[in-house]
Length: 158
Image 1 (cartoon, rainbow, N blue to C red):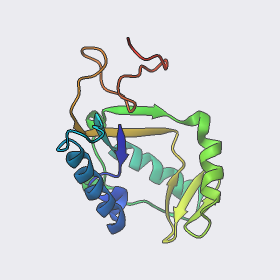
Image 2 (image 1 turned 90 degrees about the vertical axis):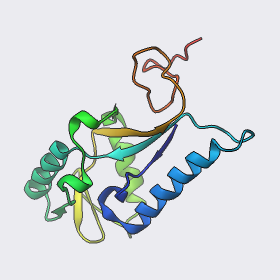
Image 3 (image 1 turned 180 degrees about the vertical axis):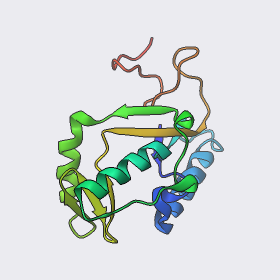
């Protein structure tokens, strides 16, 4: 599977929007060439409206950052999420990785802010919508995961 920004670049950043468009095009083009690698699914990282509201509360209560913009254009309804991944076990590693980008990010408590001082908490759960796919899930009726064909327990079906 391939993961990219949503069509609004997460929060409207023009470079991220361009990356989304290029990724969607590359995904489509890969299927037009019989000799190319054929990725089975394309996912976009999303924030739900409920999460944007919760994040804004945390940001206002624990930092001097402004919350990342929300609203209907930059978020999705919870029911539209196809896949979630609990990332609490790796939050410390994510925080350490973010520290390597001090010119682009400011960290405060368990939150980060971009150079314009808009921020959000470091995620505990990542959310994705499937925006492209050419294959069936590994088991009938199952939602495809980010590593198509692999089950949550890490075993690959025969």
